[in-house]
Length: 131
Image (cartoon, rainbow, N blue to C red; front, side):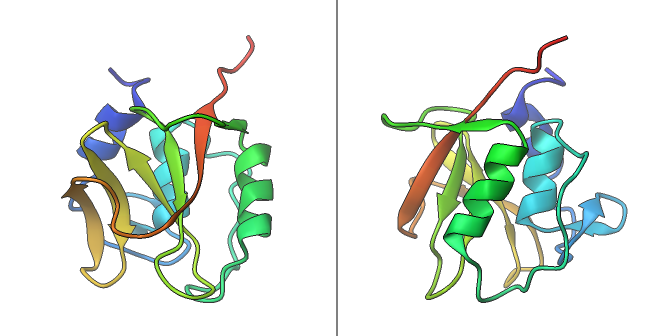
């Protein structure tokens, strides 16, 4: 279960939102949530703005963290890259029935039922680490 991104993300629901947050005890943002859920905490960038995100830059970050872009319909445990507003990029973990993400407006990690209400930019599959 600890290797299941959905299980890990659900265990973080309720953690406070914090821009550039990388530790549950201090708060998380969408990048920190994704990094923890997928066990990719090393090399996660900071220094980006809450608004004004660049989708190409975020795609580079996601690839660097070991994800492969999915060219078919998204599935459970995929990392979704969404566009919640103009010049905004947001990450969330798809459970198969809901989205787990860091909601800055609500100030915490939440699980939102149903398909995301924002446009999907891309879906990403976790590439397994080689030992």
